[in-house]
Amino acid sequence: MVKAPADLAVGIEAGLSRYPSTLSGYLALQWCAILDRQRRLTVGCSSGFELPPKVVERVLGGEDELSEVIGRSGGVEGLGRKEGAIGLLSRGILKRVGLTEQAVLTAMVPRLNEAQYFLGRPSKIRH
Image (cartoon, rainbow, N blue to C red; front, side, top):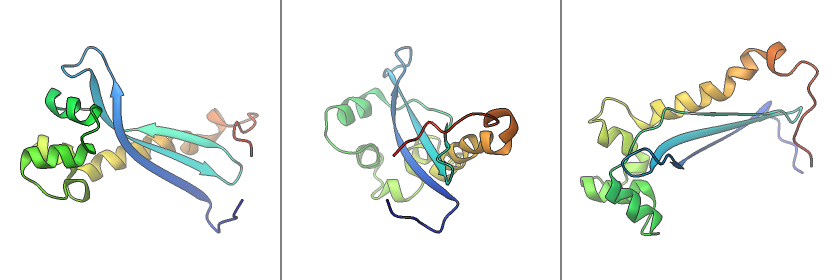
């Protein structure tokens, strides 16, 4: 294992989560995982939003990544590096960075309340 000079390792990813009661059966969410030097892992996610059912069908069918499918349908190239699907669908009211901030902040909740979350609990992460 490589030892990095960082106190926290942060991973961020977006994807579809199954929610059968939605129009398409899925919500789009941003996820964040944070690992510290004590091997304590915390996870958080953003608010979820529905995607057009045809977009979900195309993504699940393996056509392409979500940002590419929805970008083509909305006429925006490189959408994943810009405002993201939420930016396009919310007409700019909420952008991808806002969802990412939500995911990171919710993953930090246990770290902001360490005594309530970690006191006397061993790490679940092993190498």
